[in-house]
Structures are given as C-alpha cells and as structure tokens.
Amino acid sequence: MYAQFRHIKRLFFIALFALVCSHHAVAQQKVKTRILFVLDASGSMFARMETDTRINVAKKLMYKIMDSMALAKDVEVGLRVYGHTSLPSRWDCKDTKLEVPFKPANHQEIKDKVRTIVPRGTTLIAYALQQAAGDFPPEPKVRNVIILITDGIEECQGDPCAVSEALQSKGVVLKPFIIGLGSTEDFRRAFECVGRYYDANTEEAFDNVLNVVISQALNNTTAQVNLLDAFSKPSETNVNMSFYDSQSGSLLYNYMHTMNEKGKPDTINLDPVYKYRMVVHTIPPVTLNDIEIAAGKHNTIGVDAAQGMLQIKVAGLTNYQDLKCLVKLPADKSILHVQDANITEKYLTGKYDVEVLTIPRVRLKNIEIKNNQTTTIELPQPGKLSVAAFNQQYVADIYQMERNELVWIMRFPIESKLTNLMMQPGKYKLIYRGKGSYRSSQTFEREFIINSGQATNITM
Image (cartoon, rainbow, N blue to C red):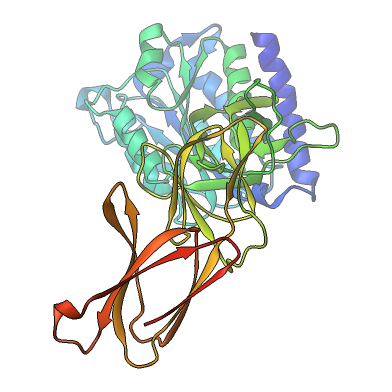
C-alpha cells in the first residue's frame, strides 16, 4: 500500500512541475483552485505518532507541502484552525478562526502561523466546516477544496455530514478530503459521509496520504467511456456526454464521444475531486450516477448504449413538403423525439410507438429497434385532394369509417376558397354545409377516394 502511495507521491511532484510549465492544457483545465486547510488543534493532537506528537508531524508536513505548492500556478491556499485558543475546561464549541486567508504567495505566512499553533481545546468539526464556507471568496468557475486534518470525531453535537452535504449541494465547496490521524474503524465510519477519507496512522502514511490528496485536488486524470453495444463491445460513438457534479448538479464537462485512430474510445480528462452524474445523449438518454474517478490512473466507465436505426420512408415520388414523425416510448405518452420522414435516426434498442403526421395520422405500435440494424417503416405515396368552394364559405369536416364508426380526420379552413391537401390513400367522407346557412337540414355529404399519386377534385 505504501509503495503505491510513494508512486502517487512521485506523480504528484511531476504533475506540479507540469502544472507550472505546460502551456497546452485544454481550456477546461485552466481554472483557479483554492485549497483551504482545516487543521485540528484540539488537545488530543499532543498524542504521540511514533517518535513525535501528531501536531508536530502535521506542522512538519505542512511546511513541506507549502514549499511544493508555491510552484503551482492558478492555485491559492488558506488556513483555518480549530481548538487552539480556548482551554478544554471552557468547552468552547466556536473556537475556530481563519488564520491565513486566500491570497497569492501566502505560503510562508501559513508556515509561520502553523509554527505558532499550540493545541488546547475541543473538536468542533461541524462548526469549523460551516465557517469555512465563508472563507472562499465568491468567484464563479473556481474549484473550492477543503482538506481537513483531524485526530478526533465531533465533540460539540454538530453534524459534520449534514454541513458537508449542504456546502456541496450549494456548490460552495467540492467534496472535502479528510485525513484521519491515529484513527479507528469507528472514526472512519464517522467521516465516510463527510468526504473522501484517508487513514494516516504513521508519519510515513501521513506524508503519503497528504501528497495523494494534494495531487487529486490539483490535477485532472484520464478516463475513457465505453458505450457498449448489445454484445458488450465498445462500438457506439458520435454522441455527446455531459458530466454533472452529483452534489450541486452543476454542469462540468461536455465531451462528444469519439473513437481514436486505433478505433478505441478516445481519452478524456476528468477532475478526480468530483463525484459525477453522466448523461449520454442518446435517444432516449442514458444516465449513470455516482461515478468516482480514481486519481493517478486511467479510468474506464462502461455504459449500456446499444443502438439501432429507424427510417420512415414514403413510397414513390412523395409530395410531402415537411413530414414529421412523433416517436414515443410505449409506456410514456410524452414525445421522445420528432423525426423527419426519409431521414435515418439512431435510438436505443427496444420498442417504440410511432405517429406519422400524415392526413390521416398513421399510428404504429411496438416498433422494434435492433442493435446495429435499420428498421424501416414504408408508407404509401399520398394522393392529392383539391376542394373548391367558389360560391360561399363552408363549415366542413373530413371523416373516415372504421368498424362502422365515423372517425374525425380534420376540419377545413373556412376562409379558403381552394384547399389542397396531401392525404394517405383510402375512402373518406366530406360532411359540410354553407357557413351562412341557418338550417341543419342543409348538411351535405360527399364520399371520395384518395389513390396514391393521383388527384381527386371536389367542388362544394
């Protein structure tokens, strides 16, 4: 385990150097990061950690980290301490202070302040986290990170989990990092809901963990998204993927899925500090929740996204100018997608209902989309109906007989003297009367037939 930490530690210093020297990072990586160290200075920090006290080990490693972070660009640091100004007998549950606020080049100031800290009081984690929210200057598009270093659990009846969740959901800070000194299993369980927890029971472990946390706080890591077909092969592509912060709901990244030169899903950069909700914008979209990215290694995210194609064709020479088709899920009455006729669209495999906006409408149930196949719906070529009303305006409707029932198709525009309609082949009935007529008995009926590719003329 320590060998892995040492490897990540080396990666951290390499990443810091790259952060200073690189001028070719993508735009999404060029954001300011603010890291607030929240240091426990309660009386228990005088406990031994191997050959020294916990507070002295923490001080020594803070000096070291400040020297390293002084090289990093677009990074500001601050220091909040708790439990360091009141004696234990006072049980002061508001004993916390922002000792060094965020500002450029304050690393030596933090080192000088840490050197003077003497542990005294109690452990007030919830209140310290709550106050920490106000330590970050209000500035959009800044990554706000808290690193809590503590050797004890809450002693002031606060709820660190609730405070942390509230700060994250409001987008004030990212998920906090907690480094537990001299911890137990109960200690770990108490902090799992607060943020990303790390044990540091020895000075070497503390050193390694602190560098791992800093590395995650500063650097993006690589990932690939495998959009899996029906055979669990990553063959799907050419669709946008949106990555949201699971806590705050903020949109963080958009990546159009691409295959690289080797035919493999292309590598993308993701910030390992966040827990993600990913939406793959297939039709319908696929959502994957609670994605965690491991820093220092290449991550693979698999998503079931098998797709097939749907095409709605009109036979022969069509006269439709802009024919639309409504695609719906069988169990959902809402419209999933509006597809143009004679255009092929991709959908997730499964069954769909299709409603084609012809006259009359064509409704098709449980159309199956299969993996990497094209399902084609072919409609007959329409015919043309021309209705002339030269003498007066009419109130008129078109109907069709289905199982001895009259089914309404459409109402004519009464203002038009000549109406041209493209209609599906079939037998219809026109029912009308003059608009100015005062007698229902002056209702007229005309039956007519529409044939594919032919014109039918009616004069009222």
